[in-house]
Image (tube, rainbow, N blue to C red; front, top):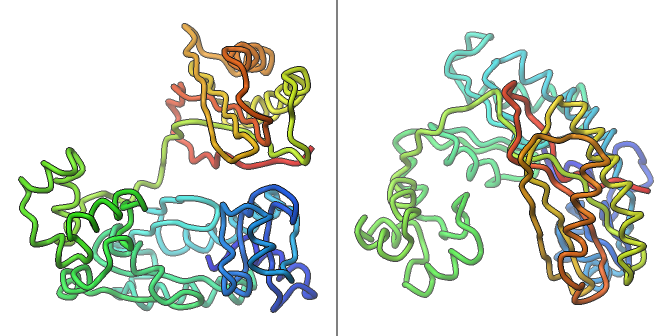
Length: 346
């Protein structure tokens, strides 16, 4: 989906259309969850502080996120997907892989299927979407960003290697900022540069990931579209309007976060053993503290008590702007797709 959260807000409130918009955060604190394309022109992007976003775009409008609404629309869109194939692997509320090799429409063209799905999303939901079409998930993912917003790109089998060779390595899905910088230092700027490196060279400089990069740049990726993704963790977190300086105040917030996490665990009928406390300080540095219990838990009382123990594990180095609790090492034998790390309002 194109700037999903922001586009939903603009659709629901026509007064916001055509205006620079940030979902989440505000001009004094908080973090931007999504930015409209009008805001992106000024350099505003997700995960940026509200303060920085406002500096870049003085006319920026902040709105509170409405995850229930985003989830509702995501379900509408996903329903359209299932009209074409049952092999749908959601990555988040606004993105999914579809395997249309064998599809319910009997259409041999993945390109035409993508066009039809995008048209239906626009007509039935009112939002624009972009698509990438290719022989595997890796190439399709890169292609999906190529003609955004409201576009699509097909990379045919005989075009894959040349397409990858011409890309900056930072555009390779799975190569983050740190790895890209490391590649630049080694003289690897494009896919063509990466392709020239031997498997031994990549293993030496990138360890286990070296082999992965060796095959990716050749368009080889055998990851299947998995319609049932097993959740690795379930979490809840909250960014505070005012930084917290006392653990006593943090305890109160942790109780409410634990209650929200319990609700999510009950919804998906999941429990786990490893509790992780996430702390983000006023300088945006982040710290996590974890404890693994000998038994599975999903109760808010146990979640809170374990998180409280982690809270007092060591002294805070600064005032705190965000707290979160996550539960991992799950017993989710029944595979479900779980959307994690959604912020909620107090």
